[in-house]
Structure formats: structure tokens, C-alpha cells
Image (cartoon, rainbow, N blue to C red):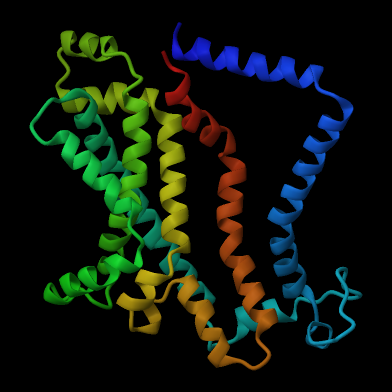
Length: 296
């Protein structure tokens, strides 16, 4: 029995069991689903409503779940105030996240392919070592990375974020692609070799096209990690023109008084690009993350 058949049979068992379940069991399932949605979406709802509520409502003791009035004044402060250059922070976050994700994806393609197709001493040790790095808490890497960046004079530069963010995102993207490349049949590469392709040409012209969904998924996860990263940026950056959005939001507390509305507005601005990307590319993510599990 192939992996695909095993997965299909498992879903069939779950489906048949669900059909035979009692009404109480179904109600419990729906209740758990609703509670999960509430706990997942309520923080975002509070963030959105806070960003749209006037200051007098934010600090009122009689504040309800549904606001009586809405305003865009907090967004006006964010976009028009010279103390919070949101365009600069947005560009910094976008450039760092894009470049980091591209670097991590290219390195992961080559690394994952070598782990699955090339037998060389130490490949298993290297792969496991990379996974161990991903399991380490980011705080444990700050001091070693900072010392390394100081030696090369890279502190307070975008290059410092390109390097450290790649270190942080590479293990995840590498693992995703390695898990998928293992499921690809070797015959498609052998046919490419017979046609005269080199190994690099085979990767570019054969492996990459058939792996597009999982590549999109890996890119999105890498982009999300780099976009939301705070710790490394707060330590390695010292000049405000280089700040990313998470660091810029931190500066709001010292730049304004009664800043909850502005902080939530800036948080919405920071969150929206990720939400839009995930909604637009959701089908590629699902297909990419499940592809390696159902090929057999």
C-alpha cells in the first residue's frame, strides 16, 4: 500500500466514523470549532476595533465589545506624523523579508536536493545540525551572532539582517523542501540526464517547475518569519532609518502619549500584507505542505 492509499483510507475511516457519531458528538465538534475560531480571531478583532476607536472611548470604563463610533484619526497620526516614518519602516521590512526569503529559498533548493540525491559523507549530520539550530530559541543565538557581526563591521546594516534572518528561516524552508524532494521519483531526473541536462540544469528546468506549490509555501513561511522578526532587529539595528515595522512600533510608546490607538493602527498595517499574501496564495500553501505526504 502506498502512502497516498494510506492517507485516503485514513480519511475514509474518519469520515465513516463521523457519519456514525451521535448528535452529541457532532455538537461537541462544532462547539470546539467555534471556540477555536473565537480564540483565534478575537485578538485581531480587538486590535482592529482599538485602531478605529476614538481616544475617549479607548480609556472609558464603559467601553463595550462593539464601539459606538469609529474614526481614522489613529491612522492619520501614523501616516502624517513625522515621528513615525511608516513608509520607511514598511520599505525596510519589505526589502529585508523579500531578500531573506529569496536567499533562503535558493539555498534550501540546493541543500535539500543534495540531501536527497547526492550521497556524501556527513550529509545526515549536516541536515540534523540545521534542524537543531531551528529548535534553539532565538535568544540563544543573539550574542554569538552579534559578536560575529561586530568582527565583520556589519552591525547597524541591512546586511546584518539578511544574514541573521537567513540563519533563522533556512532550517524551516530546508526541511520543507527536503521532505518534498524525497517523494519525487528519480526517473524524471534520469530522463533529463539522458537528454543532456547537467545536474544544475535538471534542478532549474525539472525540479523547480514540478515543485512550485511547495516552493511557494516555503517562501511564504520564510517571508512571514522575516517580516515579523523583532529580536534580532532590535539588537543589531541602531539607526532609525534602518528600522523595520516591529521596531518602529516599539518607538511609538516614547513618541506619543495615549498611544494604544496608534500602536494598534500600526499593528494592522504590519499584519495586512501577510494576511493578503496568505489569502491569495492559500491554495498553493495547502498543496505544497501536503504534497510530500501523499506522493507514493
